[in-house]
Image (cartoon, rainbow, N blue to C red; front, top):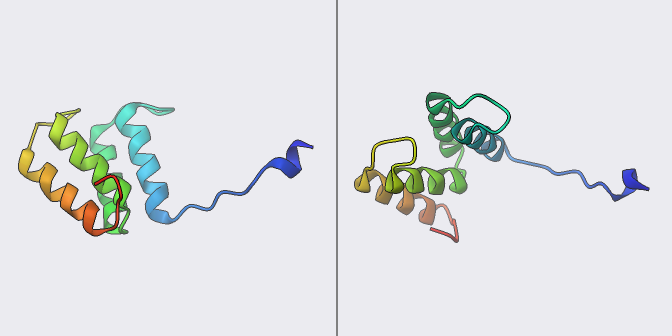
Length: 88
Protein backbone atom coordinates (compact mmCIF):
# COMPACT_ATOMS: atom_id res chain seq x y z
CA UNK A 1 0.00 0.00 0.00
CA UNK A 2 1.47 3.35 -1.09
CA UNK A 3 0.12 5.22 1.90
CA UNK A 4 1.98 3.06 4.40
CA UNK A 5 5.21 3.33 2.38
CA UNK A 6 5.24 7.12 2.64
CA UNK A 7 7.33 8.70 5.35
CA UNK A 8 6.81 12.13 6.76
CA UNK A 9 9.69 14.49 6.22
CA UNK A 10 10.36 17.10 8.85
CA UNK A 11 12.28 20.20 7.87
CA UNK A 12 13.56 23.01 10.03
CA UNK A 13 12.47 26.53 9.13
CA UNK A 14 16.01 27.16 7.88
CA UNK A 15 15.77 24.20 5.53
CA UNK A 16 12.36 25.35 4.26
CA UNK A 17 13.69 28.82 3.46
CA UNK A 18 16.76 27.31 1.79
CA UNK A 19 14.55 25.20 -0.49
CA UNK A 20 12.40 28.24 -1.28
CA UNK A 21 15.55 30.22 -2.15
CA UNK A 22 16.81 27.44 -4.40
CA UNK A 23 13.48 27.40 -6.25
CA UNK A 24 13.68 31.15 -6.91
CA UNK A 25 17.37 31.02 -7.89
CA UNK A 26 16.85 28.22 -10.40
CA UNK A 27 13.22 28.93 -11.43
CA UNK A 28 11.90 25.59 -10.16
CA UNK A 29 8.13 25.91 -10.11
CA UNK A 30 8.27 29.70 -9.78
CA UNK A 31 9.53 32.54 -11.91
CA UNK A 32 13.20 33.24 -11.37
CA UNK A 33 13.79 36.04 -8.89
CA UNK A 34 17.33 36.62 -7.72
CA UNK A 35 16.06 39.21 -5.23
CA UNK A 36 13.68 36.69 -3.63
CA UNK A 37 16.35 33.97 -3.72
CA UNK A 38 18.85 36.13 -1.85
CA UNK A 39 16.17 37.17 0.64
CA UNK A 40 15.28 33.56 1.43
CA UNK A 41 18.92 32.45 1.54
CA UNK A 42 19.68 35.24 4.01
CA UNK A 43 16.65 34.27 6.10
CA UNK A 44 17.83 30.65 6.07
CA UNK A 45 21.36 31.70 7.00
CA UNK A 46 19.97 33.73 9.89
CA UNK A 47 18.40 30.51 11.15
CA UNK A 48 21.76 28.73 10.97
CA UNK A 49 21.21 26.63 7.82
CA UNK A 50 24.67 25.63 6.59
CA UNK A 51 23.43 24.52 3.14
CA UNK A 52 22.27 28.10 2.47
CA UNK A 53 25.70 29.39 3.50
CA UNK A 54 27.36 26.91 1.15
CA UNK A 55 25.02 27.85 -1.70
CA UNK A 56 25.80 31.55 -1.30
CA UNK A 57 29.53 30.75 -1.23
CA UNK A 58 29.21 28.79 -4.47
CA UNK A 59 27.13 31.50 -6.18
CA UNK A 60 29.60 34.24 -5.23
CA UNK A 61 32.53 32.09 -6.32
CA UNK A 62 31.09 31.13 -9.71
CA UNK A 63 29.19 34.32 -10.44
CA UNK A 64 25.96 32.36 -10.93
CA UNK A 65 23.30 35.09 -11.21
CA UNK A 66 25.50 37.54 -9.30
CA UNK A 67 28.82 39.30 -9.52
CA UNK A 68 31.86 37.15 -8.68
CA UNK A 69 33.10 38.12 -5.23
CA UNK A 70 35.89 35.90 -3.89
CA UNK A 71 35.91 37.61 -0.50
CA UNK A 72 32.18 37.04 0.07
CA UNK A 73 32.51 33.48 -1.21
CA UNK A 74 35.24 32.81 1.35
CA UNK A 75 33.21 34.42 4.15
CA UNK A 76 30.18 32.25 3.38
CA UNK A 77 32.37 29.16 3.07
CA UNK A 78 33.94 29.77 6.49
CA UNK A 79 30.50 30.44 7.95
CA UNK A 80 29.26 27.12 6.55
CA UNK A 81 32.29 25.26 7.92
CA UNK A 82 31.78 26.79 11.36
CA UNK A 83 28.12 25.74 11.20
CA UNK A 84 29.24 22.15 10.64
CA UNK A 85 28.65 21.82 6.89
CA UNK A 86 30.74 18.80 5.80
CA UNK A 87 30.98 20.03 2.19
CA UNK A 88 32.51 23.37 3.23
